[in-house]
Each structure stands twice: as structure tokens, then as C-alpha cells.
Length: 324
Image 1 (tube, helix red, strand yellow):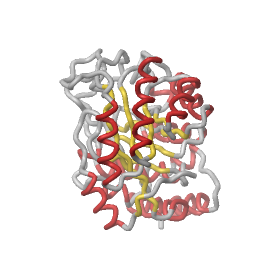
Image 2: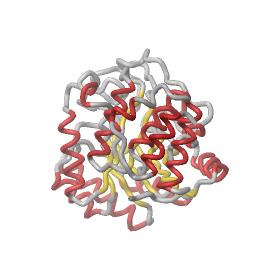
Image 3: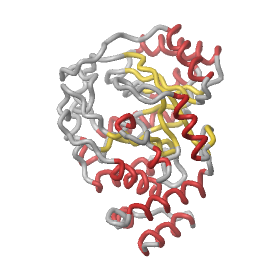
Image 4: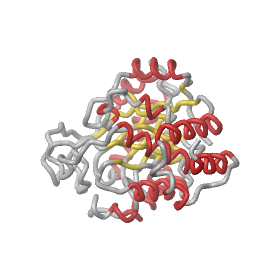
């Protein structure tokens, strides 16, 4: 085994955290050896647990924010369906459908900078109805809410809040100008203060460097995030990133592997963009990833829950909520 990989793997298995400088040394190492070592780290800390979740686009489009990757921004002209908050019946129906297929976590995602107080009240009614009808775990992604709003969400029955940092602090200002990195971090801290677990990662392929990706992983590690979505940019026509090159499977495997070295006990979740991968993400699931979003994404098609469950069984995983 490559000496750099071996030294860092042994350090991680001894429960010592890698520094940024040590992670940077993994960028040019042999890919197959790196991925095998990352998978070994994953097995050591997480076993065969695989945290699979689904999402529902609870409110679509007309977003005031200018995130350059996003089809839902009103600043751009992507061709998507727009609608206000979905009614409780539809949200509950989708939750029941997912639960019946073995999904353990269900996320309600809404467009916009933040839900209004009235919208929070409405969606809390939906969360209560979901919890009454099923025992599925509920995650929410409602933008930049405050602690009091998150406390209402938790009281309704949600257990987790998702809010991606998207990239490094350095690169973020070239991705979005209508809110700041610190506002995102404040929302994550508010959710934790309200007693909710948090899920936060980023999008790869925006034009960031590998150093930016490593900085992102270290930031979420410092925030004690244990569910880290790793999205691959799907360049959507009508957005500023429509001509960005799509990352290769090999590039994504290296990113996933380095994230596993940096945050060894987390759910590293292959998320948006998986539909662009010919292997449905299988190589990444052998390179340190141990979680995924299944079914359709927000504005793009994903893979079916049934096909994902079959792949997980074949790879020796067990669908299980992962909290550490």
C-alpha cells in the first residue's frame, strides 16, 4: 500500500483526526488504494449500516436567493414547475409510500431563503400528521430558520435539519451573494440548540478546488455534523453553471474517500447528481460512502427505491439510521 495512505489510515483507525495538510497529501495518491483504505475506515467505524433517505419537494421555485447552481432561483430562467407548500395529504401519502419500501428517513425540502412563520405552522401540521401515520424519521430543509422556529419543528416531530454549506468559506461568495456562510452556520447552530441533529455538506463541481472540498469537510467536522451529503453538480440549463463539466466517477470516488478519512464516523451521503453516474454510485459506496438519497431529487430524476435497496443488499449493506 502507498505509504502516505497507510500512515494516514492507521492514524484514523487509532481515532486521531487528520489535519488539512495530511488530507491534502491524499490528493495525488493511487485512487484504488485510497478508496480501499477509505472503505476499511468506513467498516471500522460504521459497520454495514447504510442510512438511506428520500426527499419531497414541498415547495418549489420562486426563490429569492441567487445560488448559481439552483434551478429554483427566481434570478435565473430554468424550466421547472413552481408551486407553494404542498398540502398535508400529499406529504403524508409520500411518507407512507417511502416507509412501505423500507426507507427510514424522509426529508421535506422547501425553496426560498426561509419559510415564514405561517408556513412553519402549516408544515408543522404536516409533520405531526406524518408521525401519526408512520414511524418514519422526519428531516426538514426549510432555509435559514431561527432557534424558536426550529423548536416548533422539533415539537411537531422532526428529528433532523438539513442545510448545506455548499463549499468552502473561501469559495462560497462566488456561488451565492444573497446570504452568507455565517448565516448558514448560524442556522445549523440554531437547529442544534433546539435539540435537532444536523445534516450539512456541499456540491462538487461548481468550480472549486480540491482544497476547497477539504476545507468544507473540516468545517462540517468542526460543527460536529455526522450526516454529510456529497452532491455532484448536475449542470441545469438556465443556471449560471449550465456549462460546467460533469465530474467523473473517479473524481467523485476520490472526494468521497478523502471525506471518509477526515470524518471517519459520519454518514457520508451520496446525494444530488447520482443520476449522472452510470453505476448509480456503486463505486462511491465502495470508497467510503455509506448513505444516499434515493428516489427523485428536487428538480431532477433519481433512481427507484427498489433498485437502490437491491444494490445495497448486493454490496452487503443494511438500511439503518446512523447516529453517532
